[in-house]
Amino acid sequence: MIYQELPKPNPEDPQIYARIDDDGLCRLTCTEDHEPFQEWLEEGNTPLPPDPIPEPEPLTAQQKLEAAGLTIEELKGLLGL
Amino acid sequence: MGIQINGQVDTVTSTTSGGSVKVTPATINATGLSTFSGGIQITGGTIAGVSTAGITTAYIGSINDGPISGARNRIINGDMRIDQRNAGASVTAGSAYTLDRWNVDRVWAGSTITIQRSTTVPVGFTNSLLATVSTGAAVAAASYFSIQQYVEGFNFSDLGFGAAGASSFTVSFWVRSSVTGTYGIGFRNSAFDLSYWTTYTVNSANTWEQKSVTIPGATSGTWYTDNSYGINLIFSLGCGSTNKAASNNAWNSGGKLGAVGQTDLIATTGATFYITGVQLEAGSVATPFERRSFGQELALCQRYYYREIVGSAGAPLGQNAFATSATSARIVGKFPVSLRVRPTALEQTGTAADYAIFTGGTTRNCSAVPTFNDATTESWFVTATVASGQTTGHGGSAVGNTSTTYLAWSVEL
Image 1 (cartoon, chains in turn yellow, blue):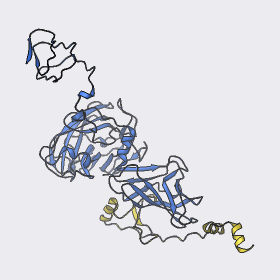
Image 2 (cartoon, rainbow over the protein chains, first blue to last red):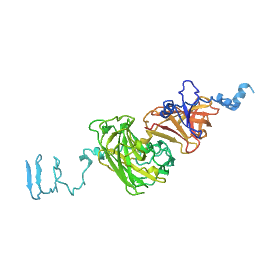
Image 3 (cartoon, helix red, strand yellow):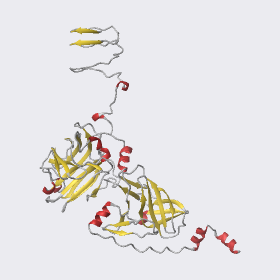
Image 4 (cartoon, chains in turn blue, yellow):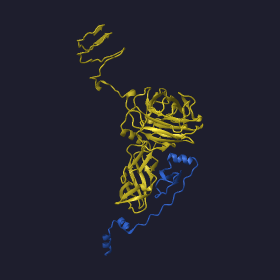
């Protein structure tokens, strides 16, 4: 078992740590105040650094339309098509 | 004034108020009398053959006092019905909580013990806690294995421990073991620097037996009276010499973990140990097990551990959710009862695909497991992550993709 820092999407977010169990799964996340995490640190352990924040997958044209609240017909009308 | 009748039975017909009737020694035939306006005082002897017919609670000052009062049992889930974490499944005992409120504490090499909620019970109960020794091993000096419960200080403070006049208390329970002999039961204070150990005997193998022990109040030591733990109740199933009490039946210094002369059940491969009906109450009398409704017992447990399980695939988790970016969402919810303290961690299944976020009319599976964001003793925030496609500000809900998908918060003692 080991702890790993999670990336902070927003600077004002609290630092959250993921506990990675021996089977590689994360079943618990916590703040730095979590008592078992503090005990783990006191045993001389150091959490792993965070993985880089993955780039979001690019939006499809349909998703871009949905995000803008437009239908294809409305877009065509805007473009005079 | 008064009427005195000696040695005979007679009928008192006067209804003059303010007087008294003295019968020495004889019987009172109260036929026809409607009231004893000044009450009846009995200063000696016994009463036999008295019918309670016609006695109403209007004439009873209070039954909510002493050992027959309500909320007697300071142990939560003493009848082992609640098992939010494992729902009856068997788990290998590490140092962790098993059935609700029941904790295993162990330093033990070479043996394997499983814990499970069982339906093997004495009459009147539906569940018990079962410990099974899959692989036994010799007891090393520093080894121990305990099944224990920490009682919150708020629920024990009225016994006045740590000062003159501390009340005694009684623990009663049903036990069934495949190994007969003397077993240790003990108690530790909040600072783990004072403990009391005594023993009980399992007389017949594989037979339910009810036991009780009465413990004198401790007039010294540190005993928290708030939301930290007030007293620690321990059933020892094994303890080496290092952690055994100096003597039984006395409050001794040190947070010891076993009784002198106790049986080490966990050294026996295949041994089984069941326990249920655990009650800790003030005073020296073991009263019948206090029955609480399932809802009451669950709510008491949820003060310390709350697991929200969707129950069916596609059902919601939490109250609602909203997108904070194309890939992130916040799930919000409220705890069913006020937690003991503010949580600092979130538990989940460990599988991202068990979770999904429904916003803007589209359900997207999570690409990472939900993570702790923040919580109070009343409500919670959880962060969820999806691959792409959300619109910031769109609302919706979190969804469990399997019937066993859950989020859980532990604030155990």
